[in-house]
Length: 213
Image (tube, rainbow, N blue to C red; front, side, top):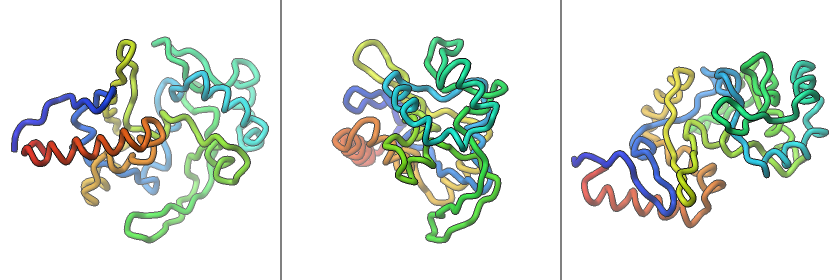
């Protein structure tokens, strides 16, 4: 097999080749949503998303901790981090203000379901799934472990962010032989559109035909 170039361009998006080659599938039964808790900054958000989140506050307020409510009252739903990026506000230097803990029935890829207890969940997504709001959650959350970064005026870079918290997801992805770009199909379509995702699939097909994948 030929050596795959480290960067693949699809439209105006530059992808790390790991997004095509690495296997991944979230396993909440093991991690219990720790990606919403661990780390030193909130989830990246856009100005439009901040406005959407502010519109959701009444619907999610009751699910937020008193500490999270206090943070939002003082600094709002987002702040600028050390790198100059807008991110969701956090509690005690780590927890996203929109996290809460509860039980969830998790659909497995083998068709079975498992009840996961005391899992870290998203109050924004809970309200959306209950039909209370039209906004689910920041696209950066849905795309994780892919991180997006604007490059110059016209390009966007996508990188695979490796994290110890996601070891179980890597193992499960390998067991299912599920590439990262397939696992994140819906978030990628949400961010870049159906036509772009089809172009990505066409690119993967061509790379396979040329012996790169």
